[in-house]
Length: 61
Image 1 (cartoon, rainbow, N blue to C red):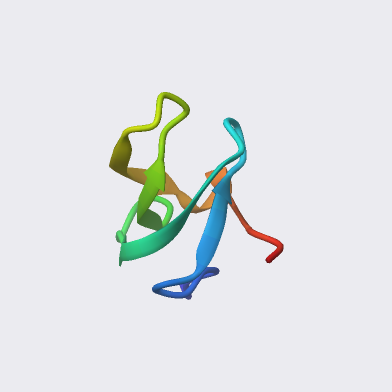
Image 2 (image 1 turned 45 degrees about the vertical axis):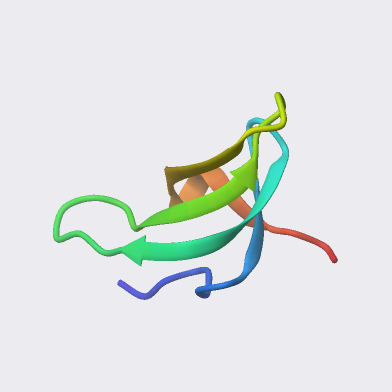
């Protein structure tokens, strides 16, 4: 399965509307692609977290 998003691309976490960039991505035999996103959380902290491909959308710059 190919990746929908590119490394370094700015994306939005759909459920929270937080925006960040892709630092890494993972492909699995049985399961959706996942992406490590570096973003600023609502409380101002810098956060790295993994999200499934369907939880992200490209950001409009």
